[in-house]
View 1 (tube, one colour):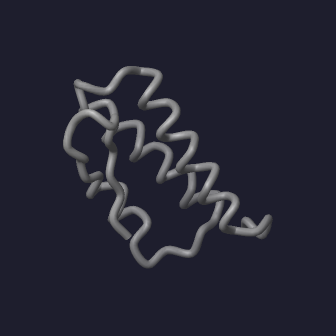
View 2 (tube, rainbow, N blue to C red; view 1 turned 90 degrees about the vertical axis):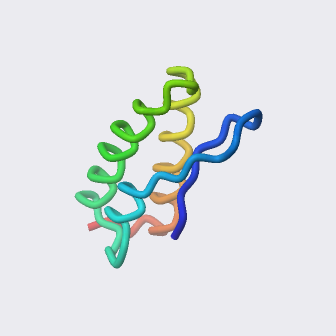
View 3 (tube, rainbow, N blue to C red; view 1 turned 135 degrees about the vertical axis):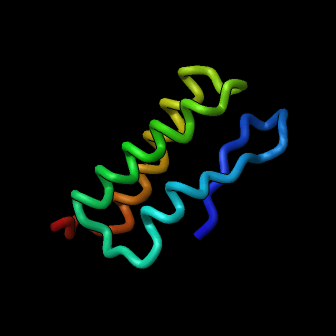
Length: 74
């Protein structure tokens, strides 16, 4: 899986640390929490992103991960 952040005006920026957190993992509450923490850290380093953009990006991604578990989180 490749994860990127883009505000639509600049080139996409990969999020390799979060990619590694997800690699080979079964989606559990613990893994999703680690992904959330990793996204916080990686997105905070993107100085061109606003606080709102970082929050929305993280929330959308986490929401999609949860949806993909089809309600079967461990």
